[in-house]
Length: 491
Image 1 (cartoon, rainbow, N blue to C red):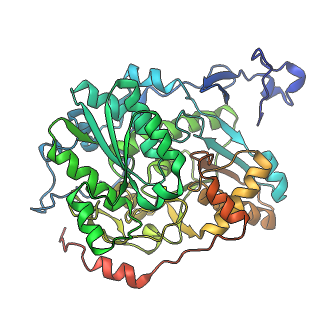
Image 2 (image 1 turned 30 degrees about the vertical axis):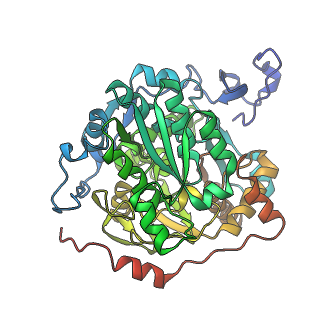
Image 3 (image 1 turned 120 degrees about the vertical axis):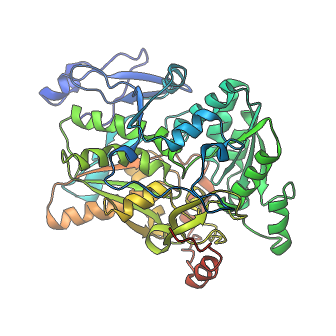
């Protein structure tokens, strides 16, 4: 496989001497230009890899359907009309659909074409550094205008809201990748955007806030004094670092109180995982085009959008017995909802305003320590991923942040790309697996998700390089105290 293609000034494709095999000579190359950056997307031998025309819904193929979300007051299964104060009708349909595929609107695909299909790259230099027989591939989503996978859902969410006459949307964000993606999408459609960013990340990552503001969004640190939920938290703890659960409470409160405003979510819910399936659908075709079959698929998990986006189409093929890869989720050791949490019904937010979802949770009151991977600081895991985990179709591990950044440095110094703190977890797990292959001499094919670049996360790298980064703790006692407040639902 050609792993890194260098284009000339006039973007001409390399001439045959550049290719190293008969297979590679058959390849065509497609150039995408996004924000002035030349992006190479891997193509099949006879035709280009297209942007998918449909999103994929894993629920349709699961042998056991996931438990339904419940109304927070009645504990009865949620009805579509219960969600109408927060979401436009089309998003509600997608959240509750049992259809296997959902058509992607042409207008959304047109915007996707700014950066999709994204490249699948073989990390040959990392393989050499690790002296491993494993073949490592990474699906790189950092080529989007916002620098992550998040626009895959932000664009359709913004578009459906505009189609239904919504004037403003509100959301939460951790590291700022979702907030910046939604701000970008809203700027394309003239939609008002207001973002509550977790205080720890608001302070750590000022340039992500500036990205959001450049695209026209209003940004507030969370918890804030703007909402009742924020005021309540600050009264108890004026120095609260915030959490995604708190920021969700603030955004949901504002949406519920304003008739011209809807709420957008960047992870966890079914419709978000649905939109992100474009990642895995492309990756499947790219792997087929180069004649490779993955032995293991690795992705980082916080709420689960990036992990689901890559893995769900492969899980479909696994259920159909076409392939049999190990599917491995990697989460922060300081916020390990899958590996330490309890599988039960819990609120998606801290204030208890959202529906109850059956998921792996540390308790909706749990406030993780302020690790640098702000996008992974969520108390729960996507209900659908939690269900897939319970079915035994995937596994999960947790890794502390110093090991993650050690892996990120290896990756940056071999592959050239500086990862966001979130995918450093997947990179660290990939390195563990590659070293294991070196010891066993197994030539496994490893596919991992590189869900975003770390250009606005350099203060975290500075801390690591100066020796000032520490592994923040996970408190069993704090989790137990938080789980004591989880509603008791018999279902």
